[in-house]
Length: 183
Picture 1 (spheres, rainbow, N blue to C red):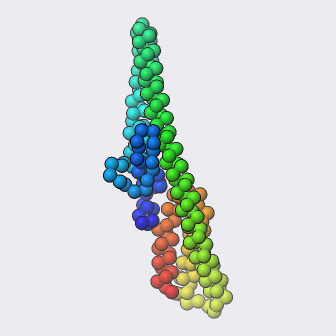
Picture 2 (picture 1 turned 90 degrees about the vertical axis):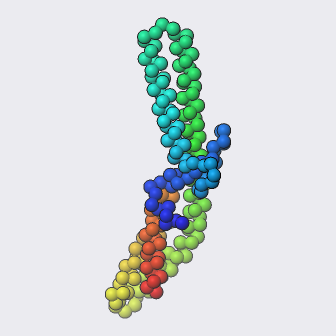
Picture 3 (picture 1 turned 180 degrees about the vertical axis):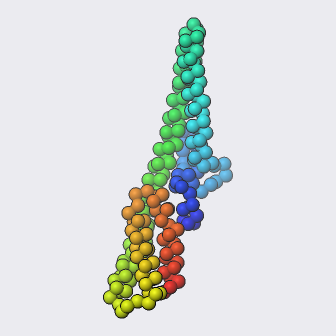
């Protein structure tokens, strides 16, 4: 499951939103009737663009017409609609960020638990191979892959975002499989 995530550019692009009125629920899997949060944001951006064009058009008409009361009423209505859409969009963005932050914290806790012991094993393996007799080509390859895996694990442990972790997952899986195959 993790390796398929790595093909996307951003964690948030894989999230689904369930929006009911002012309530926004963010999920990692699709359920009936849900859409990707990015689709909601794209739609809101289109609506915001249209509202902003309408506001500019009203301002442009301000110079040409004399019915100031009507124009001001329409302008205020459009301005309120624009503000409502902007608050709604900000709510979706905040919900996405809160979800990602929470998910990252939980994910990082799990990753640290799993990878800390593995990192210790890799470092012991390198220490043992450096004190052993001259290595064969196979031994040198294993040592090189082990050092690469240590770097990869360290990057995962040092990651500050899910995207940084996700980028390293394919390399981690590849090297782990290679090292297990050579044991």
